[in-house]
Image 1 (cartoon, helix red, strand yellow):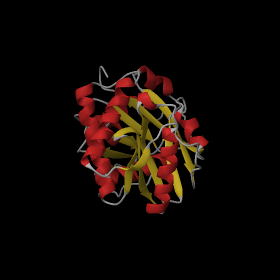
Image 2 (tube, rainbow, N blue to C red):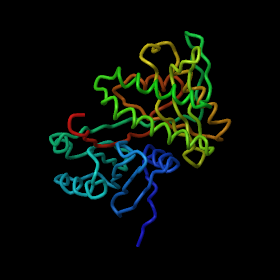
Image 3 (cartoon, rainbow, N blue to C red):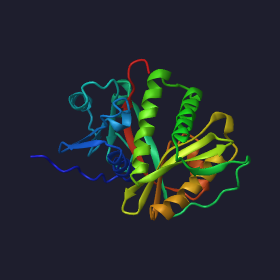
Length: 274
């Protein structure tokens, strides 16, 4: 008997999966976990993972590795989400010794963002509408990747990023949200997506600023602009955004009105050499 996909309890994964499904992701319920597959983008780690319904117990590493390989036999990575808002794994040392990174991202919410100080450069904030706009979004993503501490290999990463943006574009063109940018003389300096996750909830995606344009107020203004857009066009009553608590972005989101609500817990092991 085929089980219907379970709705995650954790707000972060609930909004993640709602958006993934709008982008063509497939969900398969297995009783104690959900298999998440994105056939159009097989190297998207968090589009191809297992969502565990309970915390993994001590000594369960081998079992979960086998289940992941069964569900994703061609994957080079391993990614496991945990449907809890608590953010603790009792056997964390076991997973870390096997090469996994344990992350506890902060899920933040607000009914409405507050306007920050205007940007310190003259930019236009607007949704992406043309092929040229989406090429600019890809250029931005590649520029951000190149400046990261551990950038992913350029050729493979370009394909992944292009496919990711194609999914977000398709979701927007189907009326589920929009990707927005901050443009200076036609160049996209910052970007993000905001999409309907159902029930009056809108979820942000991919908030990023080009390394050459940081600390100029672009991201905060774009987050606020997207929040107002979501209220107007998606009838959003709750805005959701997820941040790494070790990174400065969480403080930026809090300055425009977001407040921590839950923790999103996951385990990931990159492909060899990544």
